[in-house]
Length: 347
Image (cartoon, rainbow, N blue to C red):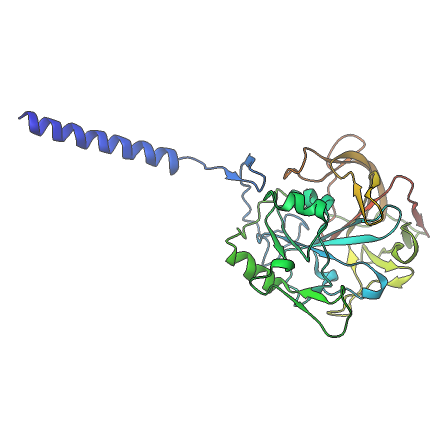
């Protein structure tokens, strides 16, 4: 009899433990870990709308991949640049050369490049978009962070899965290219998650041009130096900003299309040399002055990014402290030094 009671008690204990395990692991919401080890609730997105652009697309919930790209005149036109959901441009030498980080999600360009090296101050921005970081080598400052495993990345210098290739029509270092399919394939082999965890930007429901007659358009000038000078021509009819470099149309080598975006966000940040002559640092973590250009208007405010190498979102706030609702569409973020000329004029 005692033996039977013992068996019954053992069975009850086993069932109780199993029930507790089911409740703990399967019966509650499980938080997902971000790339830097912080816990945050995974956002649910079943709308078919891309959280960056606010537009519907087939790959709306695919994790974005951020690719470092050259910006030098010798490398233009860039491949895939018109297909990025969002692009970040900022100086890699104080007062001089700029570089681009193009972030792809919705579209799948067959060629992207040329691909260039990682820089450490782009890494927190990529983290904020929950992006996989793709690059061809990097500065030792960047590797200091990458070697800590701060962000999931795909490096051409250790390209075990052939994510990158070189072309014969360009000279090094401008002949390194990739494609989104290659990067996605490599990400899968690295067992990186391809589910998008970016919390997204708020978007206007019924955007329309704010310009009224007799104004028919506008021009935005970003005063980077020399061959890196940028301008946007605002097309009132299409409600888009068409991009120019030194007064030449910024086109995509893949399709010949001019780059057109719905939003241009300009954020001012301190830039200073940390290793002469090659490396600088831009203070992209913290806050500063910002202006957002959309619908033919200029919105003054501030940008914020909290923490140090965290997955916090790069946020744009108006003068009331409310997050600016973006016009749905592609976005270009221009990071400029405090003394860089930024001029908006209508005509």
